[in-house]
Length: 191
Image (cartoon, rainbow, N blue to C red):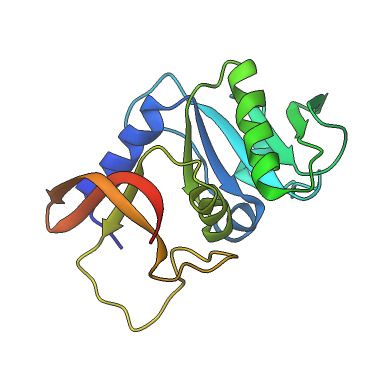
C-alpha cells in the first residue's frame, strides 16, 4: 500500500534493531522474510510469538532458520527455558499473565544479547505490547490509497475508552513521497 520510500524506511528500522518479531498468525498468512533487503550482510534475529512449537515447514522462517538466529516464543512451559531443535530456539516464558509473559520475554531477550526488538506485525502481538506499556516508539505509516475496508491496526483486550487511552508524545511527522509516517512515544493515560 505504501511506496518505495516508506518501505525503505521500514527496512532501515529492521536494520537498526537486534531482532524483528511477528505473531504466528502473520507468519501463517503473510509468510514474511523478516530480513533486510536493501543492504547485504547483517540480518537481525527473527522472532515468532506462538502458543506452540508448531511452525509450518513451508514458511520462509522455517526454511531459512539457519541463516540467522530464529526464535519461537511460547507462552507456556517452564519459565526462562530455552531449547534448540533443528536450528530454531524455543523460548518458554511459562507465565499465565500476559504482561508478565511479555516482560519475561523482554528480560530473556536482553539476557540473550537482544537489546532491541522491532515488533513489525500482527495486530494481536503489536496490540499486546502497546496495551501493556512495553513499546518505546510507535511508527504509523499512512499510504496514499484509501480503502473501503481492511483489518484494524490494533485490537486491545481491555478496550481503550477516551479517558484511558494511549497518546503519542514526542511525535515526529515525515512525508515519504506522499506517504506519511507519524511516530511517537506511546503513553497510557487515565483521566
